[in-house]
Length: 181
Image 1 (cartoon, rainbow, N blue to C red):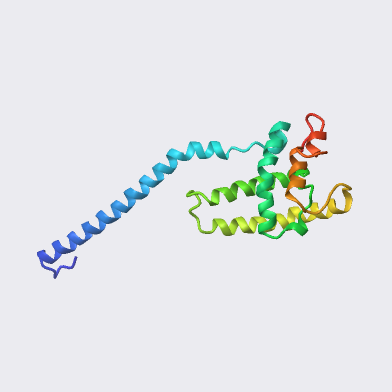
Image 2: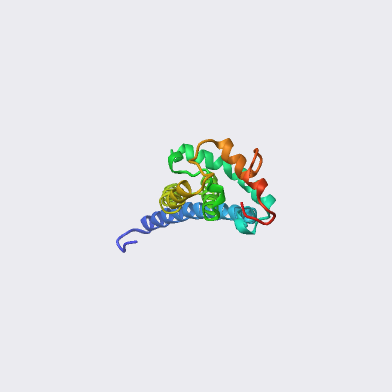
């Protein structure tokens, strides 16, 4: 307020200032309500986010997790045209399985309202291609040159059955108790 303003002008300025404060207060109250809702949902999100490391899973849980992971990996391989770089024995490599589980969970989070950061999808794609370059390429090279039973990614049914032990001669069914898948 300027000294040269009349009292009426000063009151008008104060009223405008109060109106702006009321709008900002309403916006802040809405943001606080939204944060409270997210906090109320947090225990469920945290419980759902709890992930047991692959090596700590029971064999039956590994089979179940592999069965749940296999369709997503099929989608991933097809969607990003990775079939020529994807070994058929991906599920036998614990580090790769752990990475894929993390990428799947991150991808699922991107489809929820909790993924408000616009950079999250870009970061996910960066992580995917870092995984392909840093983790998958060496595994693929090693597997395609050393595993007799290994083959490039060909058929969802073939390797999904192997991963879960549900097909004839499935790898999981041949594992001794306590072995990792």
